[in-house]
Length: 287
Image 1 (tube, rainbow, N blue to C red):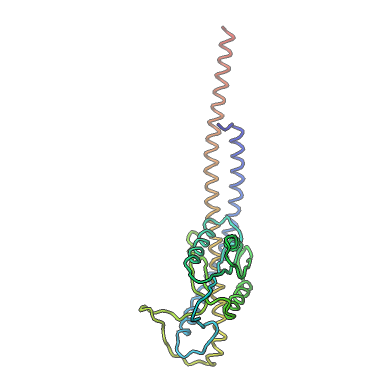
Image 2 (cartoon, rainbow, N blue to C red):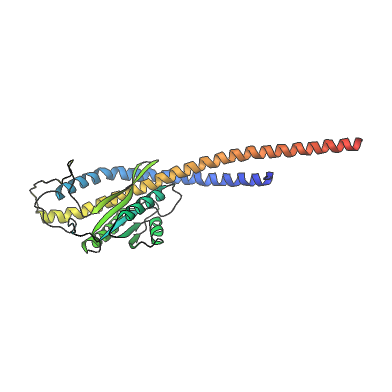
């Protein structure tokens, strides 16, 4: 049975932990607010760009473009995995790693990884997966320069023929307690699918010419989707970390309460024992 001194030491440790987790929760909450605002501001533009480019990509008689080129035989695919730089964010990294692992295991072709964040890179390189490119992002969240660097590398890998398709695994942000990992195809850009499962076919009059227009819009689309995924992942990470630190703070409070009650019982038992010993000693002296 633990002594009163040991219990008090545990109470002090739990109070220190509670102070740390409470501070981390406040930091995560502040970062979440900024990240959430960035996501909400960028999401409408990203969605409209996505719809427009997919619609144009489904039009007939479009000129050939490297980012639209679908390979006859897919020999190698790359998965872009966006995880956190560090832990202490609940199940955020675990869910992403599990989703990515299941997707990679389902592929029958040769596969490789492009990782954003330390957690994904460490997990898969230790298991023998090929990593074509790894990038670290600031703790506060990715910025446009990070997205440009990643997009340029993905475009190089695809257009050079090093990989035949590129998929993106990230966590879509809904709220501080809800983030959903998902895998979407990034390259080649595919036309949208109608309800009957067939691609759309539309005719457009281009001004300027279609070659010039696609050369301008398709790289911008790729950058937009990549940047939006990085923003979504950043908000998901901070939301998950805030929730995890909130739970840790509550758990530390419960532990402090339980240990305090236990300490009071031990102290009361000790006092009772001392009183009984004094009374027994006094009775012995009388006799």
